[in-house]
Image (tube, rainbow, N blue to C red; front, top):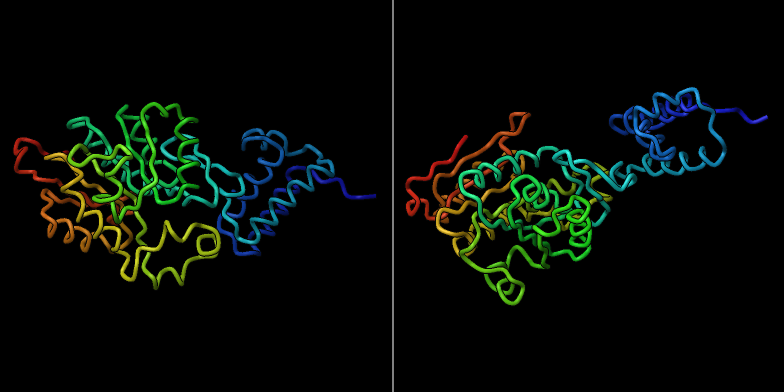
Length: 303
């Protein structure tokens, strides 16, 4: 007679199995995978620990666990994640949102709190930054990405979070915002209060050392920042003066140990009032600078 597995026994077995496969946080992943298969949240799962499982449920769990054991990211398996306390759909077409990026949103909101205005989100991916800003500040956001598959996910996330009336999307290359992107898609120079971006910033050397979940599954297009990881920042700073209104801000997320180099690019491009913001692990995660700040001498940045 086949063994009758309970929910708790399967969670424990899955935890051990994932740990042996080198998966980080194996217990959490086990609970989320089993919960997804049984359509239960974690509280519901705890309340069902003694529940016996039928073969079809075990088969569903086994298929999910096998994917995670092969180091497919949990978020892609579940096809969802949380960011800014909002639900987002994610697929291998988009980078998985990281909690650190919420610091970028916080800095964008500080700019908009001083004076609301139009926002341009460059390299929107799954749309988390655009949606979070629109949802919180109720401002118009133009979101761009070079991937049509990513834009499809971002549009769905705007609808799901009820900001489709505030966020518009367009296919565009961040390296050519001041040329082809300005023709025919509604993007106009000099009108944006905030140009915000979490661009590709992984160096070529780092690309070769990424963990399997990232290297084998997340889109390289959203990761590869060129030889030194700064290609996107060079393009953004070159185009910022054209795109931003006087007194508008360019605010970007940066990789570890990149903040000083990016701030130097900002200063060389004529941006003023440059600043760095640490994330909650104490790492310089955001760099910002103001366009023609002298034209709005009375404006100061908070924080």
